[in-house]
Length: 397
Image 1: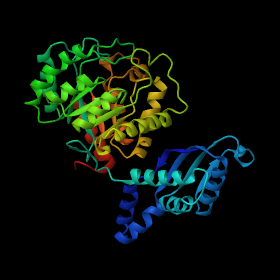
Image 2: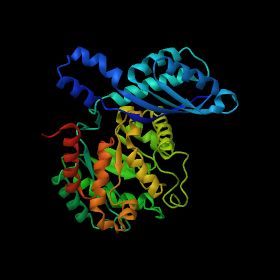
Image 3: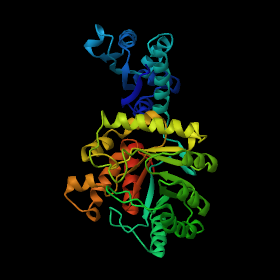
Image 4: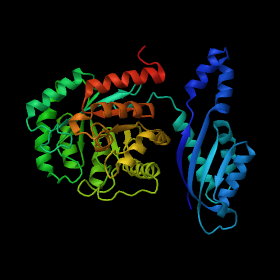
């Protein structure tokens, strides 16, 4: 039995360091005290009850906490979840003790170590050519007649103009798609999808100074797009066949792995989750494992929780609120909530009347850990993200 670990809460180190510097604490003192003050809450799922009881005692011994089911004391036939709470220092001491323990605690200790390191790393990661030292914005260019947002274009010239305007408005990436993945959408053949996107990518590759990503599910389209000038693959639904994983490994292009439950044709029929964020993290972990085993560099992988792809409005709201829990993976986080139906449900509005809701969601997503915001309204999103960054970390001042 191998327990799985999920994040519930983590205090940010910036406030602790800033506060100590303000009162004159030396750097050596800061380095010693921050791990004693920085706090984490994790959920470990499906533990052997015997291991859970050992884990609880070890956490209590270092001054932390661990909550388990009261059944775990007397019934060892059923696995139990465990909610862990403690400082970085307390977890560090407990992890060293857990490495020598049975019942799945050794791999859990390794997972805790990775999780803490992933979470405390500064927001200075890169994704492809982009340094994620600020919240980046991906502009959406849909070359489709049936886009949910009403912004789809059939004309190549209009799509090129839209992309160039987005770059001028401050976009950091242009995301080009040729197949609608709205709920209930009919699939498009690889030939048709390629015919839609390749002329636009070819025309833009010599004009844009920012990278182009191809938004697709098909390896044939991804390969043609990379050859035409795209440099990032925005993989709807993640890796679903070996042909795609082999292609991505061979090309070495950065890839965004997006979570999707089901297919666009049926994903909204009845989405079900044990816990929406835990399930998303678990499935994205499996996707990353497949990618790495295929030869894809983990430093070139970003993850996307897939707002609206097999989720109810309640699920989507929960994802935005708990987005920071994806930090446990240690990879850049992209989120696309622009004009999505859950915003329309909250505001009782149509897609072209969801700007304020989209911006509110974008700012909250940035505050909760998003590195890249996928948006239709680039200029407004760039400005909102700039203010969010300034408030959060005094960037851009």
